[in-house]
Image 1: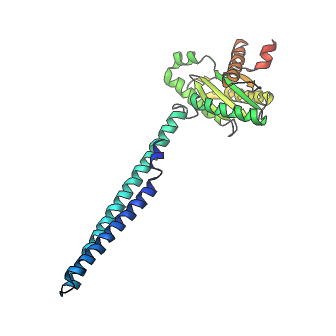
Image 2: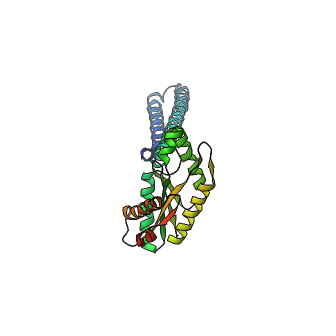
Image 3: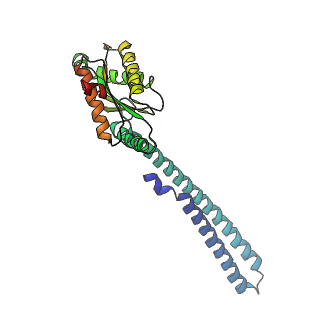
Length: 255
């Protein structure tokens, strides 16, 4: 990250300040000694020393002001780089329309959760869902209305799940939830809770909206792709059965 370039700035400024002071006082003392040797027989010694010290103090004051201004400029540059870096990080990991995690960030977090499940045996469940007949909503009400539905749905789901659950927009009208420390039964209960909340909610522009859900649990040997694929297949099984349903991958395989 760009901000790392400036992490050593305080050390650099301290060294620079010290060098300026050392060089300055070395110069003043050297000049004083030379003048002392050259003018020790005259009565101008005290006056000459006084002038040298006054000039030295003025130079020191000016140098200190310049160092302070430079330090402030460096701090401002560092703060600006940090702000830009944070903004870029946010844009890289967040869906601009809904404000939740995007697909890229979700896949990174999913990989970390899979590693933890493999290491500690913690159950992990993935819920994959999308909006039923979303194309019809866009065709009938327009894309602005479709965007409004996506934002409203996101807020509704976010208020239903736990803070520890990872919620992301996977693409288009597709969403994913990663429920840590939950088995498939708990995952189905959570999906049903969300499905019911969406079904009972009346969206601002379009009114009734429904979603279909697929649930899969992490199994040993799973990869990010395999657990997502099973949840996706379960979701399409729910659509084939009539939409607005929750489908467990294990159950749809038994049919």
